[in-house]
Amino acid sequence: MSIRKRLFLSNAAMIVTPIIIILLILFLINIVFNEGAGFGPNNFKQRWQNPEDSNTELFNNLKKVASLDQEKLFDKAYLDSLSIQVESKNTKIFIRKGENLLYVSHQLEDILNEDLPPFGNEGYDSIGKEYWHNDYSIRQYDFYFQDGSEGSIFLLNNSETFVKFARTFFPIIFISLILTLVLTNVLLSYFMSRSILGPVKQLSEASQKISKGDFDFTLTTKNKDELSKLVRSFDAMRAELKESLLLRNKYENNRKELIANISHDLKTPVTSILGYVEGIQDGVANTIEKQERYLETIHTKASYMNRLVEELSLFSELDVKQLTFNFEVVDIKAFINDYLDEVKDSLSEKDIHISFEAEDIQAYVRLDRDKIIRVMENIIYNGVKFVDKNTVHIAVSLTDEGEMIKISIHDNGPGVSDEELSTIFNRFYQTDLSRSSGGSGLGLAIASQIIESHDGEIWAENLRNEGLGVYFTLKKSGDKKYE
Image (cartoon, rainbow, N blue to C red):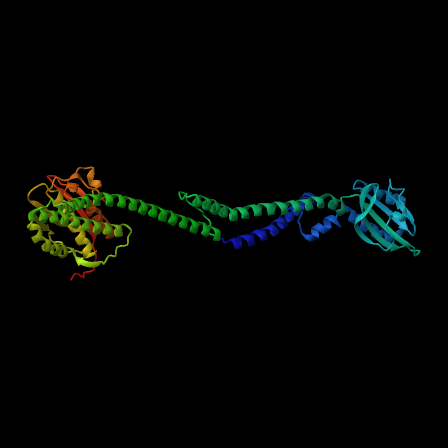
């Protein structure tokens, strides 16, 4: 629910809730004093202003006497009998003729004519007057005696009048209304402020943590209002910022490591080049043969440095995901076969023999030709460096793995230790043999990065007999666009 709707409902509840509670209080009071009677307006008026009880019947009888048999109004015995009948109900009878009282109920003999309403005030007065510290409601009937004088009949009822009820319960109702308003406002304000200030507090605390470099927390909310959306957006921003900082730290550490490794790997050939140059300058290479040998060594070391710089540049672009890939769908069997045909003759001159086996595989994969050739080249030449035999055998094969094609490259070298199997794809990782052969330690690391960019996997295993097997997978493609 949006904050606007919640504020509207909250304000409406602040108005409606007290009204409902007051109506409930009045309903309960009516039930108590009306002995379960209804709460309609007529019933309420009858109960507090003109109750239909036995006094009404008496009053009506006296009105008939005043109209039909006025002689009874002078009969004290008759009136005493009526007074005795209603005395238990705290009802008093008064008969007035002119300015004189013809009859006054027992125990009220000291009441004066001036204490009663004047002629012409006929009806029912629920407010009445106070006599002997008690509230009395008054019923009055005015008529004329046969001699033309004014006459009045009064019934004074010492009952619970509406005034007394109002004096007793209206303060309670008023206080209840005030308390209800205060309580309703406090509760609604509390819940509304919690729903609004809660997310604000979350954002404030999160901002303080981020300012101190703490990103290891999560902001959660179950609501769907505007502030909750802001909290979720802020948490997404926090996660992205954390990932960005981790990536920045990773790149920074990579940069430091690269500088350290570059310094280490370049120091040896540079030192060697300087030594041979000084030998030529100092005349140590005093023959044509020595000079040619020195220059050949310098050329070899310079070529190694050039290749190392190229590999460092390539690995750096792969590591920061800035190297451009030109993907195309190719027939993987034909592609690898063409590549091996191109390098087979040059490898044979170095006693490196390559075999290829692909069974009846006819599969198309999406790849970057130059990058996969670089992977093949790095794996093959890395294997050649490890082989400790005069003749090197490299076996390449393809296997259909369902949605993937697995390329296997085996050599007949000594393999590596089990501990090294999980580290040979790390950058600048070199075994003693590879260091002695002048490797940069980036070949398999570059191959790993390229295969990951192709959504494939790369790993190594020691073969049962001898040698090392390097495997990588490429995802199949349904298109057929090999040229």
